[in-house]
Amino acid sequence: MRLQNKVAIVTGAGSGIGRAAALRLAKEGASVVVADLHPRNTADLIVKDGGAAVATVTDVSDEDAVRAMVATALERFGRLDVLHNNAAALGRETYGRDLDLENLDLEVWDRTLSVSLRGAMLGCKHAAPHLGEGASIINTTSVSALLGDTDHFAYGSAKGALITFTKYVATLYGERGIRCNAIAPGLVLTDVAVRVMTPERLAEKAAERVLPWAARPEDVADLVAFLASDESRCITGQTIVIDSGTTAHRPEHALRRHRA
Ligand SMILES: NC(=O)c1ccc[n+]([C@@H]2O[C@H](COP(=O)([O-])OP(=O)(O)OC[C@H]3O[C@@H](n4cnc5c(N)ncnc54)[C@H](O)[C@@H]3O)[C@@H](O)[C@H]2O)c1
Image (cartoon, rainbow, N blue to C red; front, top):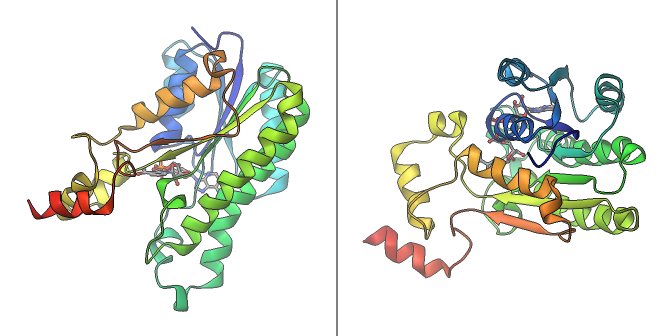
């Protein structure tokens, strides 16, 4: 077990990628704080499986809530080693309305940045004083940060800024032996993604990849576990793309495959 005696906080751990990461970090021996607006049953699943976990109802954009989230880790488990800033506002009222730039509601812009970017900043701000040598911070960004599009301006902008923020945190805390990296998934087949995507959209996405398969939440969790562990001890300030090759090729490649 690569994370024996370590303590991890995972935000947005009530579902999808965050839940898979929390389960995986626990399997590696970490005690896990499951932080989410709706933590659901992730902590129970970990405990049932013989691991250690506690759930906190946390809005990562709220400084007092983030302070309390870090305090929970310290009070319950006595230390903090891993922070996975993963929460994002992906509901209908934010991501679902993050479409047309000229009609973009400022509330959608502000909420999107508050959760993805301010949330990660607050997590780092309050966790950093308690992190020691060997600690690892992992920020979930997206391939939406790397390429332009005609919609989701707030989401792409927030995730892009998170890549730069990651480098700043890595630079600031490198001397203390604390690492900070970002992961940039393409389509991940979470329950939500599978539910909301039409067969046509899934086929389009398949044509964009070079590999036949899209990532499952567990594939992303493998990457999180690697970045949390000492196996990645010389990697910091980086953004690791996990997208089955979606951003590996020229645009024409996808067009050719889509027409075929
Ligand atoms: N699924 C994908 O295809 C995909 C692709 C690229 C990047 N991502 C990123 O991966 C991360 C996880 O996404 P997912 O697909 O697992 O989504 P998800 O909707 O399944 O999980 C997101 C979780 O974040 C929580 N959350 C929302 N706002 C919050 C807040 N203010 N404070 C605390 N928790 C909050 C939600 O309750 C939810 O449990 C996000 O950062 C997302 O942008 C996902």
